[in-house]
Length: 185
Image (cartoon, rainbow, N blue to C red; front, side):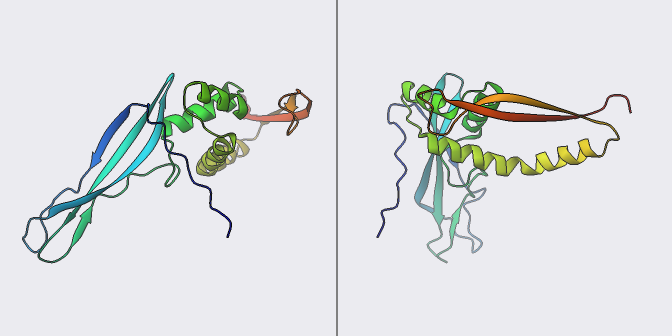
C-alpha cells in the first residue's frame, strides 16, 4: 500500500499562544457536575508581518459519571478545515502573491529563512482553497459589474515564468483582464 504523506510538526522554537475552548456549562442535564476527562489540542500556524507564532487550541472534554454524557466545545470555524494556517497567514500569502506579485517559490524561501519550512505545494493548496472560499464574493462582484450599462475592459500582457523554469528565468506572454463599471452611465 502507498504511504500517505504526513504533515510535518510545526517548529518547536516558535512561541505558542494557548487558546482554550470550554463548554458554556459543565452541569449535566441530570443534575450532576461533569468532570474533565481529557482534551483535544490542535495547533495552527499564525503570521503577523515578520513574526510566526503557533496558536494552540485546547478543547477540554467533560463527562458526567452518572449518565455517561460527554460535552466538548465546538471547533472554531476555519477557512481550511483541519488545516494548520490561520486567517492571518492565509491573508499574508494571498496579499504577497497577488498584491505584491511575489511567486510562491520566493515565499517558500522567505518562510524557510524565518525557520518555518512551508512547501510550495502546500502554499499552492492554500491559495486554491482560499479561491474556493472567495468564489461567492467573486460571483457577487461579477453580477454587480455586469448589471451596469457601461463596462470598461483592459487587457494587459505580462511576462509569466514557464512552469519548471524558475531558475533559468524563461517566460511566456500571459494576459490579465480587468473590468470596471462606467462612471457616467
